[in-house]
Length: 382
Ligand SMILES: *Cc1c(COP(=O)(O)O)cnc(C)c1O
Image 1 (cartoon, protein in one colour):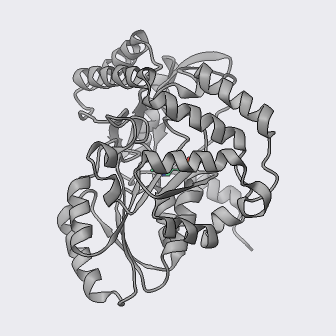
Image 2: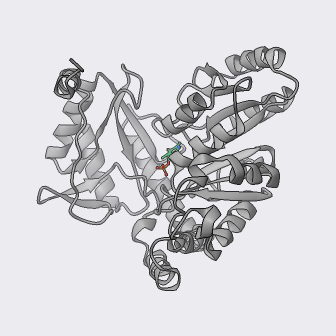
Image 3: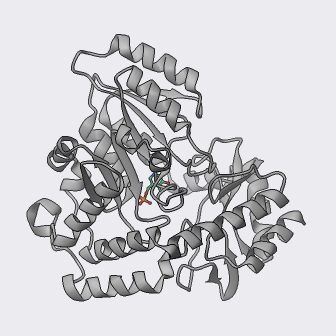
């Protein structure tokens, strides 16, 4: 008898690892309606409130009027509409790289990039806390994988030394990390990683999903540190601080042309709506404007206030504040207590984080009011 899915669900339930969808009956905002009640939302990645920014919404609507809803086909058939190229040029310029390619999602970007650029015989060296999309891409590529403990430069170097001896003369070694880690909110030591990868002739793939829009200058950690041109493969999403959907990879012209030819998640998938690209261009303008800077400043004040008042939360350079509880059961319990008080902060459990590091992942947004942040602090203190 093949195994019964009910048994598998039962096992998840018993391990406090069962997940269920939670229908939301209002637009993404700092306040959500769930089951007829209002909740303050501390779980979204809409860090700047861009998903409800009137100018971005208007651009989106104009994009629909000008370019229609669906793109009709994949990019290589007849789905490359002018806004896709305009957005890619803008992203390349912003990231100080020669070219860029956009994908429907960040997941598709990671999968499509890594599998196109790495194959059997190549070596991929990943930070232990890399996002699932990077890990899945790495596994699917058939390359040899080496994992180093989170942000551990010594182990990264010893993997690089090993790879340097082992690699074929035309083989690729690619170091893969995030700049702002998605579940911990901390930063990678980018400067040191860049100098190591250079020393060993490796490439660097940097996923800036949670830094794009919220780094000091709004562009990314690599940009803040003046290292954009040293990062061979710069990835990021339009789905977090930009409040839209889709993602990009910035690199040399040759790498981008190779992806256009080989990246299966790019080739065999319908092009994202051009209207999303139109909206993303507007979102980038706002990101770099006084409006964007003000939102980043306000967000920073919120972050400082919460980490000053709640000692168990480490001081963070990002709006992702992990409140580590250990067991899934404890995390679920606190999450449900906060839910009863009108705060939405879902428990993050294995396999998203290690088994013994279940947590509440609190995310702040510039769209939160001072009053909402106070309510969070008071609830956590209780
Ligand atoms: C969210 C995220 C992705 C995936 O992006 P989507 O557009 O949501 O598919 C990839 N990498 C990291 C680090 C992320 O946080």
